[in-house]
Amino acid sequence: MLLKGKVFVITGASSGIGAAAARIFACQGASLVLGARRQHELGQVANQIRSDGGQAVPLAGDVSEAGFAAALVGLARSEFGGLDGAFNNAGRLGSGRMVADTGINEWAEVVATNLTAAFLAAQAQIPALLERGGGSLIFTGSFIGHTATLPGMGPYAASKSGLLGLVQSIAVEYGARGIRANALLPGGTMTAMAMDAATNPDTAAFIGNLHALKRIAEPDEIANAALFLASDLASFVTGSAMLADGGNSISKV
Image (tube, rainbow, N blue to C red; front, side):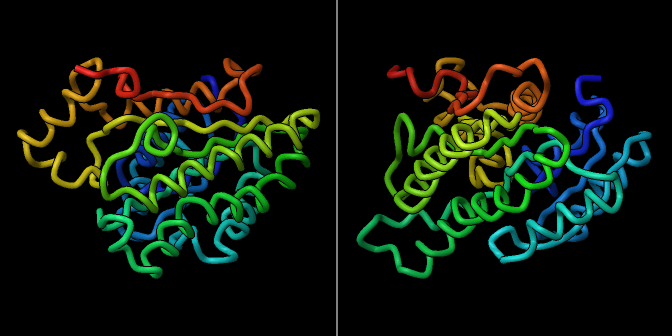
């Protein structure tokens, strides 16, 4: 029960890594406020956690919209008495267009979801964590924009790279007051966001071969890495860009 008595917000919780983290965090004793755009799927995740004896309340919304992060924190306070941490996991890939072919609206949408939303989340969550004497903030980054990138990933790479600077700033500014901030950088993961790799064995095999482990991660594997960062096992880990990428960053064969 690594998170017993703790209250966490998890975004992007309707599927993939976020849903896996919700289930794992709940099994480890956390009370959860779950956020995502898809209300029906989000409700299903929350209902499953409750049916298994856990505590979870859903709130549908878009992380890029001003006020949603504050609403999630408000729900944590009203339902569970406060906030001890957050897994800010929601993200957007983009269309895969090359930089010169990417429209300004797409650029703005990807940056808003992947970077500006993280800033808004931090602004809402930090005061709540300080009220409880500190806590853990986790942001989903990517090896893309850190150790490598791929064609067609300009807005995504830029937003995820910028996220690392935000995480470092939070860690430096609030570490002395008990707040740890870290970025979790997954490799290829079998989620809906992985698009064709989730349904096409040939694509999955190609992407898997880019990793030293020669496979794509299951969502639970990335969620377990988030659990480590959320828990006191990571009590001296802050400001980090923690790779959970199956060796993607170091594999050349």
